Length: 378
Image (cartoon, rainbow, N blue to C red; front, side, top):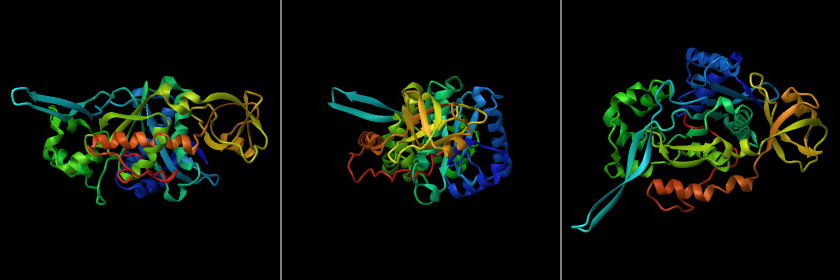
């Protein structure tokens, strides 16, 4: 498998992936004209022909038979062309000493505080390919591009995860908040936002803080809670150092997670190495490997061994996938072990349940199988 920049010839497969993803992946529209525009814009982005505010790095995951089985993306900066809104979960303290009453009320503040940061988005892997290291390659491989070209991205990376919804795609949070101001179905508002049409949010959304105690119990319970389909992606990014600092999506209350670029494991621990070709032993760890190119970017996950201090030994097929020769320079990092990836889960459960006002326990938060990666919200 390799991760590479999207090509125009991938358009039919991207349309099929968009249909398969269904609700929630609003940035992969099942519309040939809009998707074709995005693909061509991504090609300009990889060729460094656009400003950071407009950059859209769209990748595909391709197998050795040149079949595209997944998609992921990054934006150069959010909010510099169109406003990027979310809610920050804060706290309002009201007290009356005379009556002996003090109330601590969670409060939602509309803001644009993520403006200028880079976003991970458009993540989807075909269900029959959710095995091995495919999910982590698709999700984490793009981070090597950030490590190699940090000047193209913001100080932080953020990811907006799909929020809780029922089997029909209805959002309890939207029904309690957004519906009163927008007078449209959740799916339609989410679709407009995903297309970049966000001016209606500023025009219709109230600027005053919202007290969560005025929402329905169902709406309060899903604040900061990811959709079950987004939990695998959240698990992978949490192991990389991403955390939820109280920002949520304004439509479905899904968590917005973030990490400073230098603190992301894949960025921090990756290194420049010289490619060597041989036969790694059966116990060789899996590495993420990038050919250090932008327009002709190739990233793969393969068994590899450090040799001689500055050489990375891979087999001939891996070098072919990367379009490299012995002696060429690569950027590489070992994939995290299962233990490392699972390390953040207890903290993650506690954080998400605290935002929902519930105690964390084994029945209230369930993890998903390794690499059963469906998609982020956007």
